[in-house]
Amino acid sequence: SQTIHQWPATLVQPVGSPLSLECTVEGTSNPNLYWYRQAAGRGLQLLFYSVGIGQISSEVPQNLSASRPQDRQFILSSKKLLLSDSGFYLCAWRVTGAGYQETQYFGPGTRLLVL
Amino acid sequence: AQSVTQLGSHVSVSEGALVLLRCNYSSSVPPYLFWYVQYPNQGLQLLLKYTTGATLVKGINGFEAEFKKSETSFHLTKPSAHMSDAAEYFCAVSSGGYQKVTFGIGTKLQVIP
View 1 (cartoon, each protein chain N blue to C red):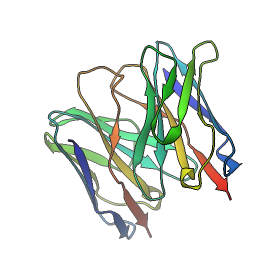
View 2: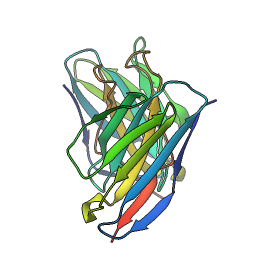
View 3: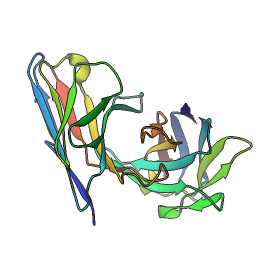
View 4: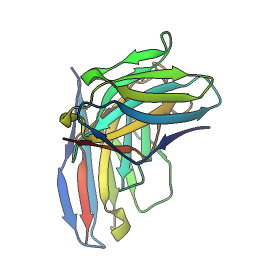
């Protein structure tokens, strides 16, 4: 069966510090991978998605970047955090190439607080 | 383009009462529709999904939803609320293109003893 991991679970960082959040998927190959941010009252905002190694699409201009160095690894980064980067970050995966009826499966999330 | 509207960011029901969470969608092509549940500080878990075929979809924990094309709706229901149903619920639509899924803003369900 497939599992998805995220770490760290929680993170408190000062403004201006760098960020690296990691997501890994087990039990599947060549998944589509997604990063979402969830802020109170705003639902889920899609930040990045990737259909393959080194292939990143950005949905919104922002202070963040994403990379996919390996097939089942997805990293969310920032060089300098802003207060507005605080939120709950969710990674998700989806079977690739099978059509848009496929379910997205979510990781446990990372709670980021920028002070 | 696709979009989702969830009516009511907060819904309160008494334990044992009917749960009704509303979701309307917009899509230029036949959509696939999903309901997810999120418990505090956890990721999203799939409740049910509609792809093709029967328009009444049954999911986990006694929830079901009905796809009504004429009303562009996919409301979530449960006949009798349980305390453990208290959570946030997200409706989502997928209608092709870039492998993206669009989520609603979520509805927080409170169950009153």
